[in-house]
Length: 147
Image (cartoon, rainbow, N blue to C red; front, side, top):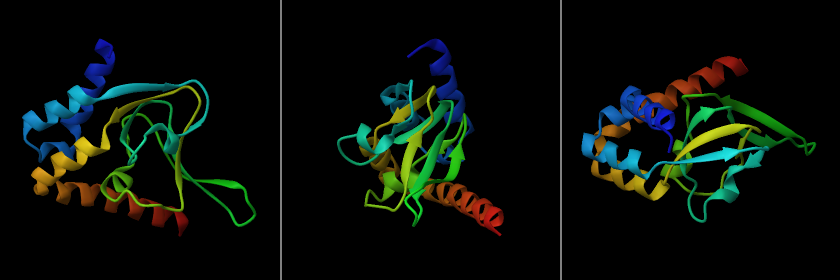
């Protein structure tokens, strides 16, 4: 990982209320396990991991939750830009859902292995409260937009 990418990851981890609730040694382990993925063209992230979806941090470009309308057209539900964490729910509950995560062409994502994220959270249940707050604020923003 480049020095810029390492700085980006360290800054994002330091700013995250979820990570603040976790032992710093465990946060450092997450940082060491992180890798960069660059996407020159639009891609569906479901096919990038052999098991449960990973946790992504958007470094450049954007990731999107998309679904298919009844007419068969692709609909973007929400887009996440640089600094956004993507896929918490899929990491925590890796079951089939009616949406997909796609990444825009030219994007760079920092990837945290799902199995490691789940094991760290299992050892630090106090991190769930700030995580639920983050997910709740996203859901509230989505509902306000829909209304």
